[in-house]
Image (tube, rainbow, N blue to C red):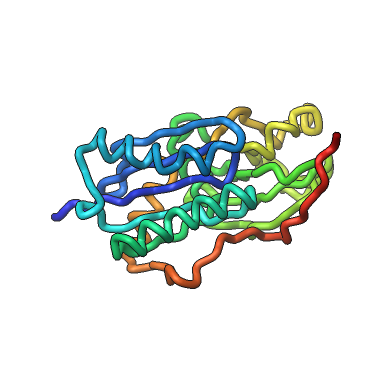
Length: 232
């Protein structure tokens, strides 16, 4: 079987990340968790992992990018970088739902400790008590669609008796106090988005030929971008 190398970009949150995978397995990645550095660091991270692996663009089979929801600016930079690389190299482009990538990465990190019937709820901070979120079962099948949701103490009251759900991601980190007495809702703090979490989905989509149109592909912002005036 020939090897298929995929370059993967993740810029939907504060983390700026690039990774390389071979046949669905991550072989190199770089994560930088600093605000407002996507524009200046993303291409440097790509150069670093190509140099580390000894690969170049002619060796690649595709480029995959985390398409959102998430940060307007981060997504715009990640998608425009991915599209520019595909234009220059004639590689196909794969768009990966950001929350699906988070769920896959979280399951891989915690597969030895997760109960089989625990639901996964990746969350991205959308300011105040609003989050971008979706819900998946252990097979990573979606149980609730991607949405922008305001979270309160009753948000998961519809869970059946005995059902548990785990919340993770930048949107979950601010909810510890809210669910401190709820045994059915567990929060795993400090989960960070990473391009290495896209490897499985990127390879699956590559094998299925699920590519997006480079000319017309846009990030999935989910809600309109609103500009604000900085406070003095």
